[in-house]
Image 1 (tube, rainbow over the protein chains, first blue to last red):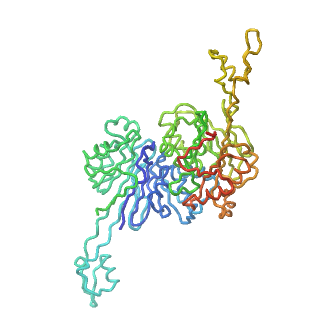
Image 2 (tube, each protein chain N blue to C red):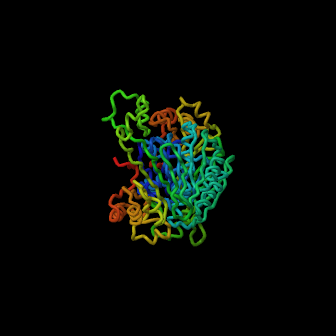
Image 3 (spheres, rainbow over the protein chains, first blue to last red):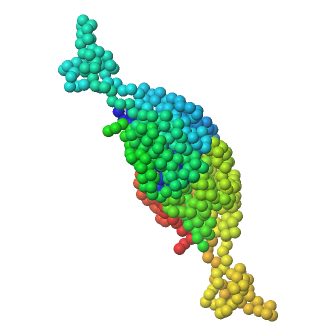
Length: 306
Length: 306
């Protein structure tokens, strides 16, 4: 069951050195979802040959331009590609107004329904309850209403232990075992006890996206048990004053959050244009949290351990 | 005196194969001006190392997203780079509303003045009267109000004929000659007759930008005497039906306009995503108008003959 994150943009507000503004594509159980949609996201999807038309949910963390300005163009491209099925947009208050005035002047009537979900960014809320996973908001601290997103797999079924199953067991009995049931014989007695013929389910995993935010200790509790954490790291610790002023984090602070929350992997991004090379940010984070990676454009990261 | 056009985007509504939506940078007498500003324009300016901060005039032909969606990000980058001097925006009715709602939700107060000029797209109008050139609208035929732009150098001064000038002539007399005056002797009689000591001025040149438009015969009269013409060529003649339906032009039609207007060079662009290779469009246009070029991303074209 797929659970991958592909980075489309790693830049902060001013795109520089070929880096693009924030956007990530999540493939979770073959459901494609976009998290943030900075300017150029549709070009980045095309560059990495990703399935733009299969995206059904788009989550916008906040209404600073570097997190959503690619959205109108993306929607219009879906329209021109004859999309007909509905698209869900999740955003703090305002995105509807922004899109409406643009489509008014371009006289665009999209040929697919857009379902707008207005996010309340102050407290943790389940905003998508899918058969196999949930998506929840993560309250963040920024200059305007802003939240991150937590993608959490639901409990998975037990796995058939193929080495133990009697040969020729009918398919519906296999399904019953997978669903956790015991198999009875004709007399109604337990014939195959579930735990003897199945293995425990695979671990359910979590991915958290946290951008943009000042260092926010309360995040640690929110992120307990996360497997992969993306946390913004706009500045180095040397520029902490600038981070405080603009309500962003340093690489060291991102690593602190990852360490305290017990993440397995930390991805850092949203880099300021003042850093041409990113090695300094990576090294700073790795001193605190060794398993840190740069959220580099085009890179894909597995949320499950492979 | 510089007069160059640099192509930042050659794509139609759906960006494809690495092509970007419409945008061009004009360098006219060292004044930098942007014509259209599709998504990703600020990244394209950075890619080609062009002076984003020196742009003082931005002309938007119409409010379809592929012609202006790069503008909010570009303005915000100018803001973050501490621009303070005023910026002039020219657009059909609506751009102000679109920007206002975005800046409202992002709580952005630009630290430089933006002067909005609302274009009336139905008739030819001078919208910028610079010391050395004018910019005029060119009414186009499209689905929403839309105009092209004509950049026209004003008459240039005569040139000093250095081979004939008496040695030691004072500077103020050189300036007077350049301004077309005769030089008098102390008795008030003509000493140096202007036409004997100067050469005719260099030719004043014209560049016309025409996107988006259906084939529009009336353009020929509007474009008489143009040196370089950019004309959209979204489709091949084989797809003429599609061109008619969407109010775009074919490569052959673009070439017809260039031929009838007597242009020196035709640039074609705004290519549909249906064409991976552009050779077919180029060849179609060149059958009618030999001196046609693809408006390729990153290419620069001189409007004056070099």
